[in-house]
Image (cartoon, rainbow, N blue to C red):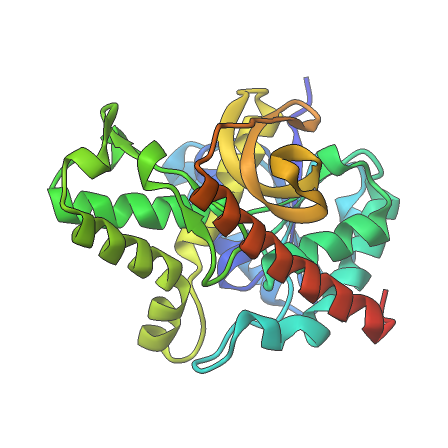
Length: 313
């Protein structure tokens, strides 16, 4: 039986971190694509030379061409310019729209049955671009944001309570930006809501830090943005799809009436399995939580309308 195939477009820090995780866990064969000559070839060779140590029998290919991506099961798209200090995610729109359009055209014609996982920012808008350009059904075009944002939320809760991250289940919905919606009510430590384990002001402080999690790392690094956590978060989604694990993860997907949101890409709880998104899980939100989710979705909608007026796609 042949191994599944994951193509990772963009061999920068995020793409290389994702490739490392795929190789280490022996999840799939990897094709690493980048426009910079020699970089994907060098990184994939380095990863191949790691495999005897990790005991991973997989094949890694680095290339500047899309031809090697043919018949991929999953394509993870990380291509684009990263955020710099002082830059909002929206500042990236024009440049990254052009990049994501071109990448999507190239991979979708070579792998018409693949699931596309976007990591490029501004995330929700880039998933919209990939969906429009590929023509794929909504089940097979999604964005990695909620997994990362939830991981950040879990990290800060673990630091606050001094408990294992494995005991913490967190849910962050909405757009991948400052108006994301971390749901404290549905965030638990071994089933106990965090609202019962810490005072309201600490919960609110952690929610605020989660919303600014990406910007915090950008300001510390000064020359780029986060990459380890985004890379492995995309691979968690790919693993659930390839192994048909049916994990329920917060992902950026196209809402068609769920949560009273229509035709907008936004972070929602999704069952991920064979073929991609199998179901959007609808949980009962309070009026305030639903309002926050709608505000977040409306900002994504505005951004997508801005992209439409640019006449790029």
